[in-house]
Image 1 (cartoon, rainbow, N blue to C red):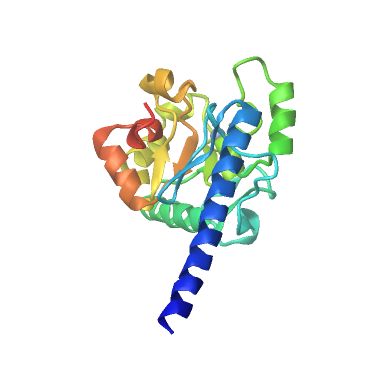
Image 2 (image 1 turned 60 degrees about the vertical axis):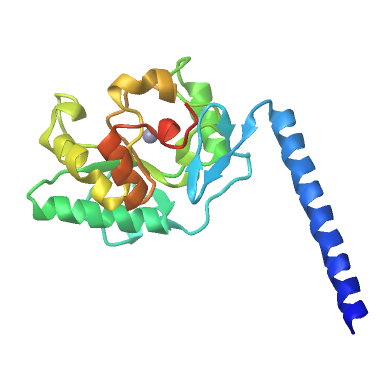
Length: 217
Ligand SMILES: [Zn+2]
């Protein structure tokens, strides 16, 4: 009996070892192929930037069409998608904003496929758009928002409200004004990223970017 158990455990150890080696080889091959590090998950936080890119076929699970959900915000299009947890957190946030008489938010962009990002990149001036695979919009965890203003979104009370409260709903302003040397992206007052309440609150308190928070810079 004891001998039998020994054999079984040796067999499963071998399988685990083979799988581990295959996974390691696979990730090295991927990194070498793209010339960049593979995308990193830190716990459940996904980091996407110039050096941590998503594969062309990466499509997030559970995408929902915002227009078909209850929404306390306006939309620039009826075809904007986000992951369900991101949508639920943003709806809670904009509902709270509405309760505080903070209205007029217009969501302009959400999930963007790799192929769509290729088009956006091709049509943009150099340095104005992320390369395919390097855009947070491919995660389905990020959205762009604005209001009707001739003054710049960053000068509106709606922006000030987000700066004060977005972390309470799990969102961070991903590309702050004075951090472009770290994020690699110039100030985007309109771009918000879902990371969960705990991480967002910690980053809000320390003023860290996602790169800094995850120990990448
Ligand atoms: Zn954006």
